[in-house]
Length: 509
Image (cartoon, rainbow, N blue to C red; front, side, top):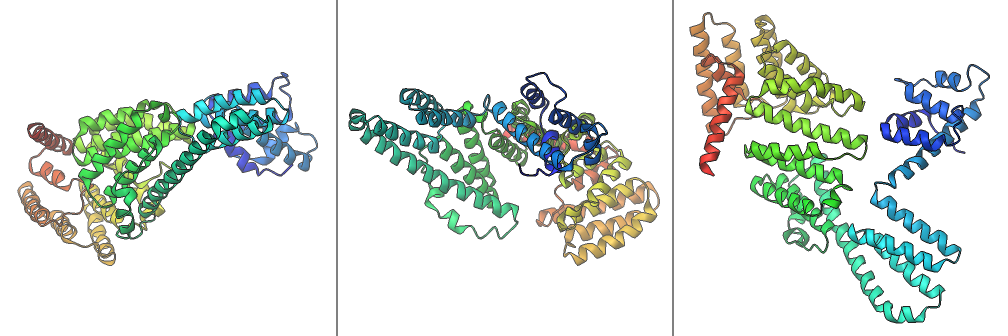
């Protein structure tokens, strides 16, 4: 038996859901012998908050003599038992596992000469495979039909059905080929974004006849076609087309709900993209309805739970920030942080989420807490490689210290911020204007002089915005300036701004 690294076994057990663990315990302990060493090892690993192999050995062998070779074999055995149990667990919910089980039955029965029973299993598999467009399985079923007929010397069947089988084989091969081509197009576009490579180098995809016109012959290819069209529009910054294709994609996916249970990640991605479009259009009514669909998705495993929570909370925070509902966002943070701990993943240690936390606290006028989250953001290695994030974080940092009255520190930060922006070629109109403003405003005395500084900065901001030089769009700098001029909270200004936009949209529609 091959040696199984302890950390791999530890991670496998820790990532199992509570239901999967209960199922394993029931199946693995059918004889009621709770003293089985591999069950003892399973419980010991499950109870650990931090992996410690030495303690595990002592618990398994109860302080007696430890045979390291036997212990290594025990871990390998437990790993294999868990995998087999999880396969059995998945057979209840996974369509692919059920089909695989039927096809395995065919193989077992064929070897024993039970041809009629083989046909029964093939019928069950074909029904599911057809319903879910599993073309590879359907092709394999046809191979078995021919082979069983040949083995049974069933010339009548071959005479009547061979042309039908040949036609179906041809169709399934064409469907698999088209599906593969669309999948490759989508993945190439996806890699362009993830690798941040030259996004202009996509002309061969733009001109590809599979993208210019849908050649779909199945539900699965239609889904990939519109996923690719939406992603291409996003890369090209064609927002109307991005929204159009994202909406069409959701309509197609939701037209066949049975697929959604099998393809949670794809459905989740499609919902999130449509939420993104709604934000760009300030259509938060549709945004929230779409986000509720994310919340209602039934997860199949812990990974699904994590992804659903991640996307739902991101969209929730964006909505609250854009509409000034900072208190609502703040009230959702404790439960959010509690759930994040249960996932035991670093995926939430993301600049985007730290920015959300900082922005929410800023909107609630809790500047110390906002600074805490901002510093967590700045401490992340990923921000070093992203000049735009560094630029935004440094501007936000100056604003927070201004609100806290740390004017001596602000003076020092202005110099370091200026040097950084100049070095990274990020010192443009809005950055220059802001640094000049903050440098001046911390020196003036009296409310009147301070207000005049903010008024001058507002006028500069308006000119920069008109000349299309405005770049700090993630943080609403203008609303912050207006809050000082109108002696209102940042949250009130943001809410009023959103209400005005909402009314304008209502009139336009």
